[in-house]
Image (tube, rainbow, N blue to C red; front, side, top):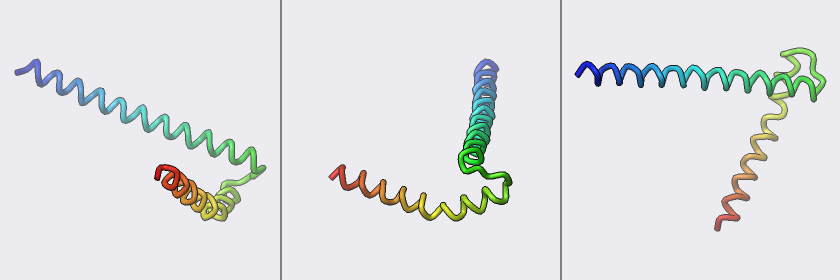
Length: 76
């Protein structure tokens, strides 16, 4: 019985470590993307970058919708 509990605890600890690792990977991805956007757009401030992102969001989201529709149409 004790052995099973220990295994369960070990698995739970591994799951927690994996969740932490995933969070760190996502944070690093966000940092890398942000760095690249700032570099390519030649933006110097966070505020300016946020304004550009908000302006471009409808275009990007619209493109995703069109791309999804094209994939759906090609699957038929």
